[in-house]
Image (cartoon, rainbow, N blue to C red; front, top):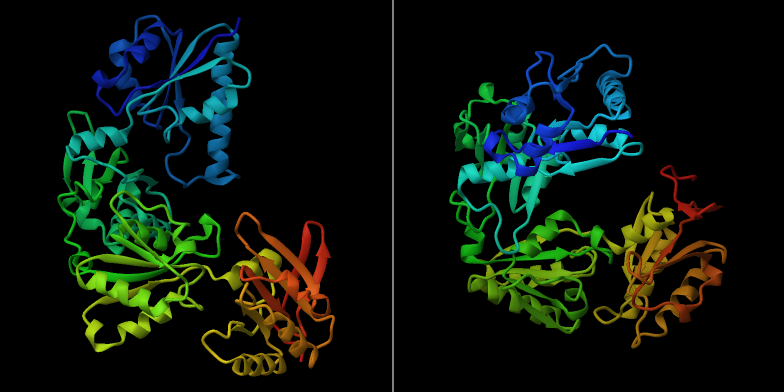
Length: 497
């Protein structure tokens, strides 16, 4: 019979944090395997030392490189793939001979550990079992002695090897943060925390749980003395003693946010942060239904036809210290609440209330992306709603946009109360364009009932268009190509004229 592969989690460094089960397996295994650098020393082996017995075979899996500098023809990735394949073959030899192998892993075997590379290569042939271990995140939090997350706070675990811009984005959006893989990446991580405005909340923990453990504020760290086995921890705002006072929260503010066109994954991280930080959510009932309020948040829903009143209500809440998120769909600055809030906020009595706008993915962008790139050249966006402007103005703007040979995105084409405007739009278009002009009809794009059709202007049936529909009228250069998987619609960047 083949032997069994054990993935042994050893915890962060203190041998007393090795679980009872891990200690038992280490002592009973035929082979003790562990990864190490070129110098041959292994932190995992030193942690497991009290549980290793005489007579056990040891397999030292030595990394060929510890930085990305290598002359391997496949580069760093190629060198590591060859190493993992060779290491797996060595362990497979023991397993086929019937020997149980305990592969040691610092922390937890499936948490940024080399064990997983062996597991993926061997689990298809051999019996494998993983014994979880205490992670470095838990050890660093314990060393810091500050609650990491509480209530509805979230924890974001980030490898320091990410690009700087990605680090900044993650840090801005997170409640609590744990950053691993420091060493050479420390300066980039520190600078990203500074850019994200989180550096003063951050703590540095080195070699957690070991006699060499060090804990200090991030600002006190000498970058030249940071080892790989260190971590930056930012406790969540509920317990972080270094979190700076939130001036905006103290005096209140209004942030107008756009949820995007419908799908949750099209809501930007910035908007998600603003929604989470708000004390009050204000908006049209349908849009607020897309937001899950956290405990303690107050939700103020209203009809879609009271924009000015809603803006004034939000500003009044903020004037009394609330952090208010005014919720729109799509982008709040495109036929949505940003303009209404700005108009009311321009009145002298609201000049002391801070107002910001967090952009969102527009409905026009979402429909365009769903079919290709019809907005690839100059385009206009026109609302067909005549509730706030005369129909004559709308019709005149459509004629001028078509005469200029622009692609035109039509918002708010119809509703239960506005049933004739789409028919009039078709009449206006046929006055000056061919009936075979490309037309995209997108309904509930990003939502559960999404539908997309690429037709011609002549084929447009006004009865099929409602308030959840957006139309994109192509220019003379817009092309629709039928391909496997659906139509591809695009307007070339160069104008044929």
